[in-house]
Length: 258
Image (cartoon, rainbow, N blue to C red; front, side, top):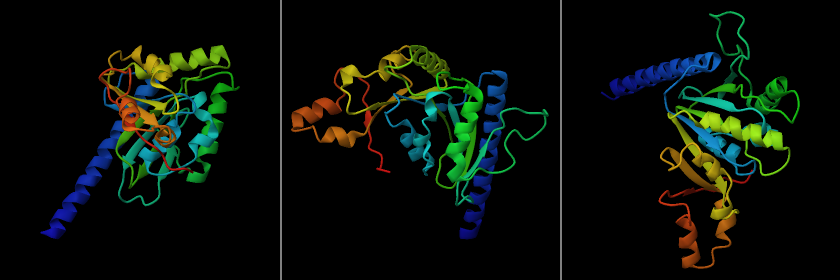
């Protein structure tokens, strides 16, 4: 009986893997031809220093130092995560930027080692944006198969900016609003704890798309920095309730130090 159950689980895992592979291929086609795709997806938004990349690496189950590339500022990254129990080491393949034949495999033939992921993302971004003052809404698509990741599709968006090049700041905001717009996308709005609730930037932008946060999850990052300032129960409870943000209650996280 035990062997039968184990075999059924293996078959179910394979069926799930095939299903998610087909879904991810459909998503790639949707991006190529600007078609609507209504399956649930996560969109992670926040300021440049709010910890978006560390948060996404936590969902992936491994680090590849995306945060070191500073790449989120100019081109969105779609990560297609597939749980594959046979993959002890993450299997990462990028989707080809251009297809020469309609029936060819849309993903690169060879895997990209973890140590080279950041560099490959940089190269692909620079090929589309040309200079650091421009952005591209053409996404980089990375498929990850790994035993410790979930079956998810995540959009890592360019970080909002407070200052600097006004054109770049406006372009990033417009692009992110467009990415957040489809109703099937769940918005993960990150805001770091060192900024007071009333002074945050990301939430007002998200409210343009989702005014009542019906499909938005608020995540307060780098919470360990705020804990040092909570001197008593009253100040702690006041902050943890999300002062001034309404009925929507945030989650609080602190990612490991690299």
